[in-house]
Length: 338
Image: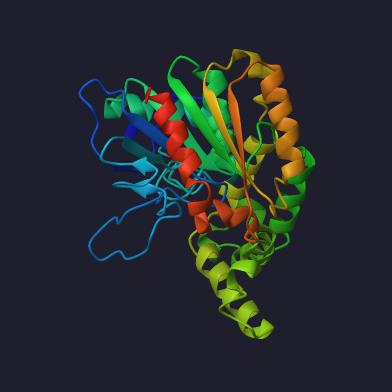
């Protein structure tokens, strides 16, 4: 979807902004039956369904979104939006700068979580959505949900924040360290690597580490008893991802994430909250979840906590969706008064 000229919170202007998205279900005549799905840091917007008859790849929340599922597409109009700053069809550092005809690269401006949801708001308006039943997503998608709740409290009834937090973890040092690591790749060229084949090896190494932090080894244990075969499969997964992701998107989205803080504005929230954490998540452990719940309740927010008893860590919400799908279905029914 072409959104036109877009002013960032910093005052900088992107002359042309596009957001990629998928939709499932039908929008009601009054535009008020919509649910926005937001994706994680290194993920994409293919959350469910099939994008074409030839595409057999399920979405990352395939078990949750569809006819008769927890997010029932016979009742809800579901919009899964790619993030501003990402590289899966939306405007980001790899996009062509209309003023130069070349990728923005390191010249792409810093963006915030507020900018990301403001672009989504414009997308929804173009689609005819007048109100959201909920915003839902895992990891950075959950952070977008929290940002929606404090930025547009009158536009959304509830949020579903999964394997996430309402405040960025780490500081700008994390962005600097990531940039230094990418810059060590011989193709970096001060960030202008697009005509040099990219920084593939650096991305592969980063992705392998990320997948292991997410809990992919537990997911593959049953399929690969041999550790070498398991490592080989993880490397193939990393290579596949690295060939399609842009290193500058890693930096831009990391910056937005570490500077994000919806927690300081909990008092502005009117949306109900379903907060979901996995018992084995190393990034967002239950100890963090309990602290967030205390702060939400102290601010008077109507919040429900669900803990997934899964060995799949950060990947549990999609892999073992059946554990929390009933809670999600009940939460959405509450939002629409059932």
